[in-house]
Each structure stands twice: as structure tokens, then as C-alpha cells.
Image 1 (cartoon, rainbow, N blue to C red):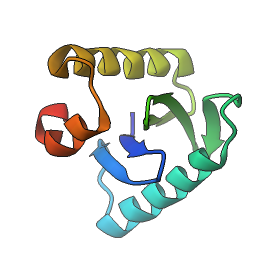
Image 2: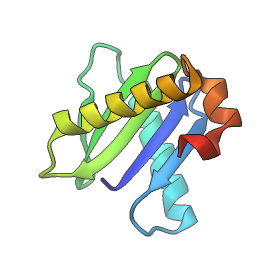
Image 3: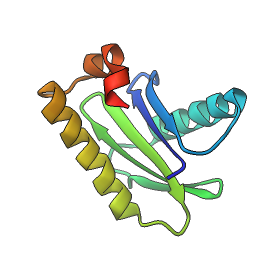
Length: 110
């Protein structure tokens, strides 16, 4: 996994975790481009997309999008399962997690 982004339906980045070294400028550009791309997609469209040399896997839960970037050869369904397990974990920890839980407790959500 290269990185994971959590953002709202309005495009506000709520949480980001990077597993590859990138400059702040690169991170901001990637985040901005990906958020715009995903928000422009219709709800019935596939949750996987090819982006640059990566695969993007995303899922919307309530008002938050959970987005992961993985290598081209990685399994999209496993990544989707990782996202789902992470959301279940947040639900269990916060008791029905919402966007405000992430905003005010982002250090616990990392």
C-alpha cells in the first residue's frame, strides 16, 4: 500500500497516511487530484480505478470516502476488505463512527 486517504463528500481531507516518502507538495497534489477524480465519479461506478501507475481502491461509508493506493499487481478485493475492516474497527472503538470522530480524534484513528 502506498497511502490511505480519508476525505468528506465536500472534498475535505480528514486523515492521510503515507507509506512512501514524498514531499509535501507532491502529497498535496496527489490528494487534490485523487479527491477530485473520485468525487466526480457516479455512485454506481466501480470502486477501483487505474491512476498513474497505481490502482486506487475506494469505498464510501456515510459521509466519508476511504481511499487506498496499491501497486498494480496487488489484489483490489483484499484492499477493499482492509478498508472495510478498518471501518469496523473505528466503529467498534468510537461506537458508530462519524466524520466528527475522525476530525477531533485523528491521532487515535491513525
